[in-house]
Length: 140
Image (cartoon, rainbow, N blue to C red; front, side, top):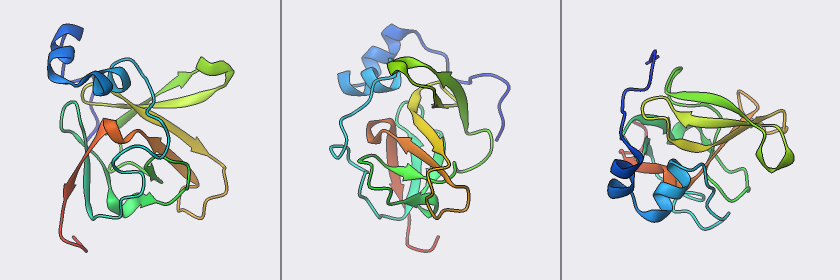
């Protein structure tokens, strides 16, 4: 569902109280977890991936695919307007940052044109620590 502005507004102190140090570093300071260490990089469980900070539904297992990059990869978000995009010029390269549209938390980056056989040819490379998987029965 599209949003005109972020819905969750908290101070950095409030976020620090609610999140673990690792969650705060990634979600609020745009950090990155080490590859192949996150909880969901190789998970094949059916479900919906929520923002760990606010609980907004962002991705589903139906769009998750094995990109072998060390982070969970999705070829599209759950719906238009669930994530927002920012130009990221850190680390000396041009990238597109992906943020939760509900609370403005950093999720990861999106890349395109890499040649994956997915419907969008996009790879949403998302930190596991930014997500919480809510399992569903297979096929739902």
